[in-house]
Every structure is written in C-alpha cells, then in structure tokens.
Amino acid sequence: MWIELAIRRWTKTGTGAAILPRPSRIADRMKTAVCLTAIVYSTSGHAADVPDSPFINSVYRYADTMLQKGRDVFGPQKTGLFLSALDRHSLLPLTVRPAPPAGIRRGDRVGPPWDALVGANPQHDQNFLRVLYVLSGTSGESKYKDAADAELKWFLSNAASPETNLLAWGEHMYWNTQTDRPNPTDASAVHEFSRPWVLWDRCFELEPEASEKFALALWEHQIDNHKNGGFDRHAAYWKHGPRDSMDFPRHAGFYIRTWADAYSHTDNTVFLQAIETLLSRYESKRHPQTGLIEHRRGNPIYSSAQMLSLSIDCAAAARRVPESLAVRLTTLVDREDEIFCSWNHNLSETGGFVIQAEKATGKPSEPHSSCWDAHYGAATTAMLGMMCVSRYENSGKIGYRDLVTAAADAYLESDPPEGTDVWPMTFGHVISVELAAWRSTTQRRYLDRARELAYMALDVFFQDRALPRASMKTGHYETITGADTLALALVEVHLASLHITAVTAPDNTIDR
Image (tube, rainbow, N blue to C red; front, side, top):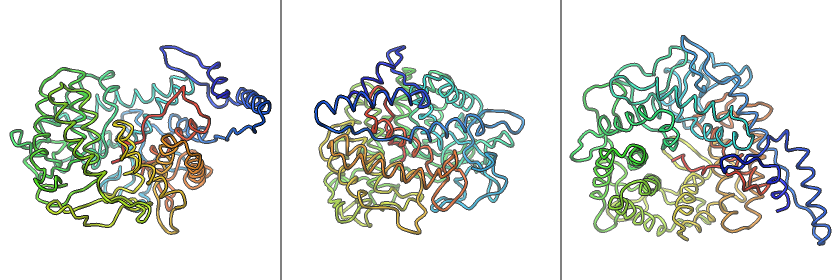
C-alpha cells in the first residue's frame, strides 16, 4: 500500500489518466518507497515484502528496439509498419527462411512459400500495439502511442483491396514490405481473421471512413448468402467466383464484434442486419436435445473453444447494439455459459478442458486440452483458461471463476516437457491465468507462480537479446507464435508484483 501511495505522489495526471515514470526514472524513487515500507512494517513488527520486477524493463527494451530497428524502411515505400519477423542478432529482415516453430503451417507465415519472411501483419502484432499504448501511460512518452497510431493509420489507408476493401492481414495474408504489395497477389489471396480485432475504437478515431468500409466488406464479400447467413471464411482479398463456405463459430464472433463496434461509431443499420443474419444462423443450428452447435457446416462435432470464443465476442457486441438484439446475443451467450460450465472438465486429473463433443449425444469425443503443446487449430489449457477469465470478469459467473482456478492449479507444478517446442504465447497465457487466479482468490501462490514463469520466459525466449525468439527450438523473431502475448503478460505481472493499480494492462484474452 505504501509503495502505491508513494508512486501515486509521483504520478502526473492529465485527462484523468495516471502516468508513471519510466523504470529508469522510478529506480531511485522506488528505493525511497521501499524504505518507507520498511519503516512502517518495522514499527508494526512485520518484515517488508517488496518483490523485484525486472519484467517491464524487458518489455521497454523490446518496444524501443522495434521502434528503432523493427519498422519497414525497405522497398519503394517506407511504410513504418512493424515487421512481423526479424533476425534477432542483426535486427534486420531475414535473408533466408528459418524453420518454423512447431505447429505452424507454411502458408500462414509472413513470407512467400519457400522464401524469406519479409511481411508485416498487424493481426499477429495486435497485442504488441496494445502494449505500446500501455507504455505511453507508464512512461509518459507519446512515442509509443504515436507508433501504434501510425501503424493503424497507414495500414487502414493503404492495405485494403481496391476491389473489396478487405485488408491484407490475418491468417493467410500479410503486407510484403519488400514489394509493397499484399501477399498473395492473385485470387488465392484468402482473407481470414487470425484473432478478433479489438482496436476498432482507435481505428475509427484515426481512420473512420476506411474502418467503416472494411466492416461493410465483411458483410458484402464474406457472407456468401445474405438471406441464409452462409459464412464464406474463404472470401478473397480480390473479387472472384464463389469458394467453399465454412462457417466456423469463432469467425462469426469476430465479425459480429466488428459490426457492433462499427455500428456504435456510425449508426449504420446495415451492421445490425449483418449481426442479426449471422446470429439467426447460429440460433437455428442448435441441437434440440443437447443444445450443442456444430463447429463447421456438415460436421457433427461441437468445439468448446469455438463456441466459447463466439460467446466472448457476442457478449462484447451486446453492449453496443439496441436492446432487442442485445437480448438475443445475451441469450446465446448464457446458453453457452451453461453448457461449458456443465462439462466434467476434471482439470485436477486431466490437466485440460473438454475440447470436443458429439453434437447429437453430448458425449465428449476427444482428449482434453494440452498444457503446453500449442499448434494450429488447437487451444491449450491456458488459452481456454484465459477465455474463462474473459467470461468470468465480464459476467461474474462463479462456474468460470472455479475453472480459472482449476486451470491455474494445473500449471502450479507443470513445466514444459523436455522436447516440446513451446510458444511464447503459451507462457503468456499461463502467466495471465495465474494472475487471474490470484486476483480472484488472493492466494499468494498464484502470484508467485506467475512471477516464476515470467522469469523462466525471460531466460527461455529473450535470453540476452531485445527481441524474444519464436519458440523454444527456434532462434529468430516471428510474431505468429505470440511474442506480443508474452509481452502483455510481462506488463501484467510487473503491475501485479508492485501492486500498481494506477495503470492497468488490457485483458490478455484475444488469442482464440
């Protein structure tokens, strides 16, 4: 408490937001705060307990290095976009294509097949942009916020298809910083989100027209049949004929959230029509006996991760649309909450969540989630735990609180198995799950475990470099595996370690 009071005395207040000095400026003042704490505790007979927090220093070094060395100054246009892959030693674009981290598909990386990784993909770097906004608050320096704003402005203004207004980002596309063109460059250029985009408020502030055009493009070019709400996840960046339609629930959630944000900024009722169309489709897909919804058209399997992701975004959308539509969204979410919390996850025995079930019988059909083995299409226990954190902190439902605690317990004694190529994203999720359990239970063991894992992550991923490596078995920087998620978790554990509440980190829940 006394440290926090001392920090607050040094806090500058502007528009109601507290700003803390950079660590280099805090150091001497923190010593004073520690002394104050020691004096107070000594008079009451208790020992001072002030943990170290080196974590924010690594995050600042990461951010400063990317601002100085990690931006696009290549090709005909000097876009300033953050490169999504780099050589960690030279801090230059990779001249050869390194072996991928385990679980990463060739076509999802930011480089042409069999060629070097030379792309920028804001969806892969979304948490890094969110970290930059936090660092402007903790440092009082606008350069971090300005850099994030510059990325959003340039990309929205320049990376949209002139034919569809879809953006060159996501799971299969990126901006090639060497050629200053989207990749791929033909009808195979598939537009598909890799995670929800939660920066629409800032995008609409910076580029309202481009943001609205993109939201409309999702409706006009990625819903293959407006009447029936058929979902074409493979709609292309360039216009072309129909492709195979696959309506995954998580993508429906990403779209619904985008349209709700767009409606809140524009009052364009087309976005309400779009939400209602997709919502009606998923309402009609629910099995009359089990209540389960298939995870893909024609596939009779329920995916807990897919439906939990849809629920998170529908709950967020419900706060931004008229009441009648909000009620329908909330009804869907409440039913999914009931289903997910009713499963016998048994994390104490399995170490994971139920991830699949047969739609018609409700019988679980696959093993539980893995603690450390991350790969395309699979959610780890920590990732699902962070989805539970989102639902608990936005609904207050006790079932989710208990699942968060169970997930945190699963990692108290679990370290990555030898030989597993663990991603930084997974470490970030585990750290954040432990912190969430600490917040809800106040049990110190969860904070201690989060700090222990954060120290491990610094050693494993950052080593003696400014940029984290892409996985435990690779040596290059590549953000597809969640370096940005780890950075956000390190900010979170720093604030928690010093009990700082004047600045908060955004929820680490967008990987799903």
